Amino acid sequence: MDYKMMVQYLECSKYIDFNESGVQRLLESLELSGLEDEHIAKKCFEWVRDNVRHSSDYEMNPVTCKASDVLRYRTGYCFAKSHLLVALLRASKIPAGLCYQRLSLKGDGAPFCLHGLVAVYLKKYGWYRIDPRGNKIGIDAQFNAPIEQLAFTLSLKEEADLPEIWPEPHPLVVQVLETYNTYDAVYDNLPDIELISL
Image 1 (cartoon, rainbow, N blue to C red):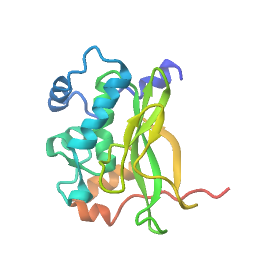
Image 2: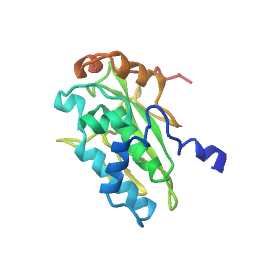
Image 3: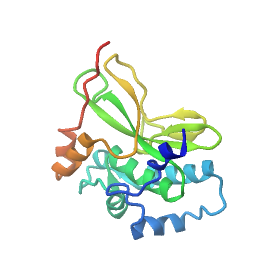
Image 4: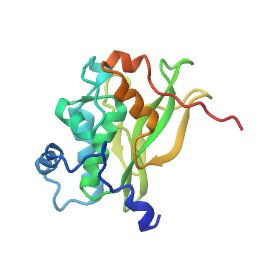
């Protein structure tokens, strides 16, 4: 990927607001100076995965979207936690973007919803997907480049790994996170994308 294409995965923005003071203080506390990109990415991933509570798992409000708000309140859905992880990576000058899976909400068919992930560009391996949603019984997402170990695997034909790497959050994700004020309202209105049949 050429430099012009990569720049978009390093930018600060409304939702990936890594210039915010809290995000900068967290980076300093992680003591990342002098580490290779792979080790920086792993430390950032594990911090977000383990220190920010998944809104639905913990039944926590408020609903967050901006990276700085995810850090401030220490809670967020998978999408929001991904925004914080991307912010930390970009602030460390490591290209990162947002990816999505389409999954069955209950694992057995409809309804379906999007699930948010992160893709980080590692010098040694290229693009590598990681899932900071948070582990619990039955979910064990890890950083083990170049092998992906995501929170969820696909098991139904209506599920999919969406191939795009987005420089900014998907508009449907932002719409849901900014429309609903409580974790349960978000859960009842999770975004979804219909797959195109070929």
